[in-house]
Amino acid sequence: GEAEGEGEAEGEGEGEPGKSPGKGGNGQSDPQYEEVPSEVFAEMLAEEIQLRNLRRTGGEQRVADDPKMGTMHRSHGDVVWHRTAADALALGKSIKRGNERREQLRKELGLDAPEEAKVEEKPEAEKKESILEGAAQILKRGFAALPASAYTVRSRMIVQQPDFDAVLVIMGDVSGSMGPDHRKIERRIVRQEIALLKLKYPNLKVHFIQCDTEAREVTEHQFFNQYLGGGTDLSQAFKLALEIYNKYPTSKFNRFAQMFSDGDDGGALHATIEAGRKVAEASDYFMYGNVVPYGRQSGQLSQAFDLLAQEKPGIYGYADLNLEVSSVFAAIKKFFGKRSEPGR
Image 1 (cartoon, helix red, strand yellow):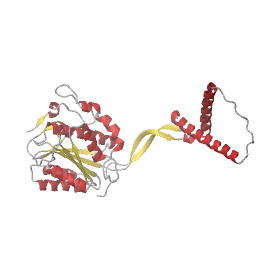
Image 2 (image 1 turned 90 degrees about the horizontal axis):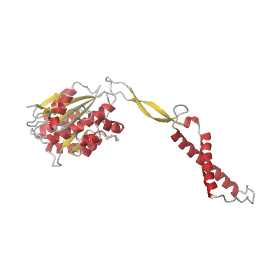
Image 3 (image 1 turned 30 degrees about the horizontal axis):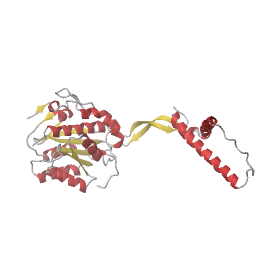
Image 4 (image 1 turned 45 degrees about the vertical axis):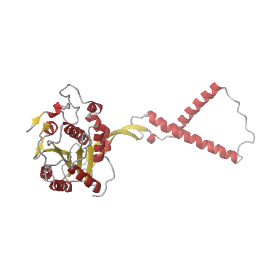
């Protein structure tokens, strides 16, 4: 049967991805979430992730302007003086070194007077004052030589994102073997992923599937808060994912799929693996998250997808997930971290 509110019993509470998680039944927030709220996590990593194998498509989304705050070199704008002064000082020092080399060359060529006036040693206070004057002169000389176009100014640059449309189907194993800690891990990574991907790709379409012996498409709220239980036949989730794909032709959409499970599949193992491979073949990238809270040996289905990811890393991604928050970061990096794309 179905039971709502499992998240509250585990101390995570309800909440939409990208929002700070709520309090649990004991009135305490999960301190691991408190350390890195989803929205902060997303902003920190947005520039470091990307969907794999993105293709230009003829779908709904066109080239979009993506504003980036930063600095640039140009002759007008709000000058960032500490950055510009550093550039001017470096240029002034370079000019000083050039002048010193020229003087040394003049000496070597005998162009200077044979007897130079001996410089009288200055008191320590005058030495320090002279050093400061020298630094000021170097900076002044550098500013005089630094063209206005080289000044560092604040900017709001517009970067055009490529035109693409994409869909992500997330499948969650909610069978009896997926206990409270398994579900906690599953929800934890999906919350962070959705916050991250929606910030980076606001037009990404996301579908959620829960599966025990049957597969059901559910809402985002149900995915995070609903518990099913029962046996396991994940081939049903893969079949439903293909049905969802039928709404998103490859000519118009990039297609991504993700399964979270402990790998203990009660159905026919070979048939489930083949169903998963069909989803991968219909996807631009397929990801499998092996949920093992206590580090025990992975189920056979997880082992199979681990091998597939090793053999075909351009098509399959695989990551182990446990109760340590660091495993979420490691998995997201494996699934979405920027890298040179291997051949499919």
